[in-house]
Length: 135
Image 1 (tube, rainbow, N blue to C red):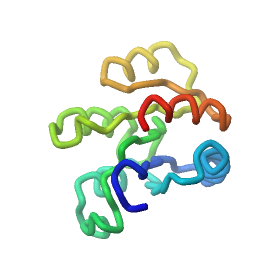
Image 2: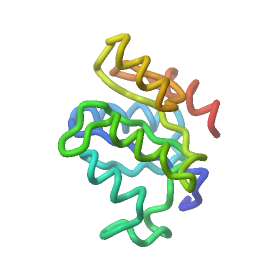
Image 3: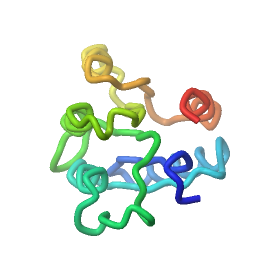
Image 4: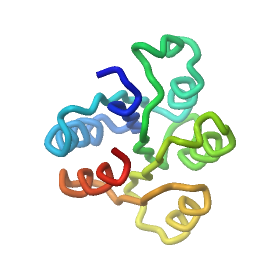
């Protein structure tokens, strides 16, 4: 289960949303391994493989990322831009998962290469649909 194609990264600071996402994901695809980063800096550290995330056997690069926008330390758009500026991470599909229904946020997410823009809370069916496009 540690292979890259069976791993996703959830970048979310709200523990209630993490709980709901884990629950929805377990219904959508129980075989996926989910790692959680609770802020933007932790997501960058995970993706860069530094500090606690240096061991790629236990912290593999994800095939996809569910990224909240309103994060402490480093904003979600900054994380997305950082990812897109690294050719070694270009293969990772990013889904923005946010409470913001703002058109300007949707447009910016698309400009930065997000595959989809999902408004919280996601349903298991919604997650299954977007995951099928990746897995």
